[in-house]
Length: 117
Length: 116
Image (cartoon, rainbow over all chains, first blue to last red; front, side, top):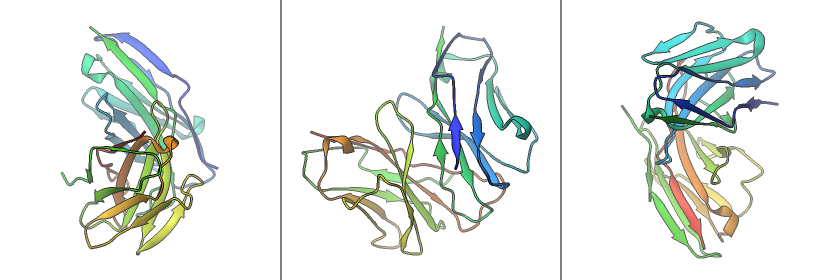
């Protein structure tokens, strides 16, 4: 069965600090997808990244970077030089299956990030 | 950027009343989904819909829930007789018939349902 664990319930940092949000997943499939979403106080789910299981290259997008390690079943997310606007709940999610369009996501419990000025 | 549209953004209803939540998925997508998030909790899968029928549903999706694609653009979630515990944010999502390796998956902005 699929499972996503985000062990950090809440993290507090001061602006400009770097912060890493952990995500550990469980799946029996060899083909799967991993996601990160940001949920600001307004409530919507903002897509950040989707990574397939065959692509272990790390990804960098501006201040955001993701580290995918199949050996440890982890897909961690780092924010460099955090800003107050990064304050949100961040969800990691997993979807099993091939490249068909069907994408049923299993979410972790989320990590609340508080960035203070 | 294409988007999934949900209406209304907020819905308040009395216990026992029927509610319909509406979604307009991205136009060339064929898979449609509803998810639910009770306040302060994680997002949970409710149901997926493909080729005019339910393709998968969770334990949460009981007989009080139904989904429909009444025309070529809308996708609705109906709760027949709402309960207090149905109060949650409901998210709609859609995906195309075949996805690229790292294609984005967008959710609508959600409908906050409050059952009084």
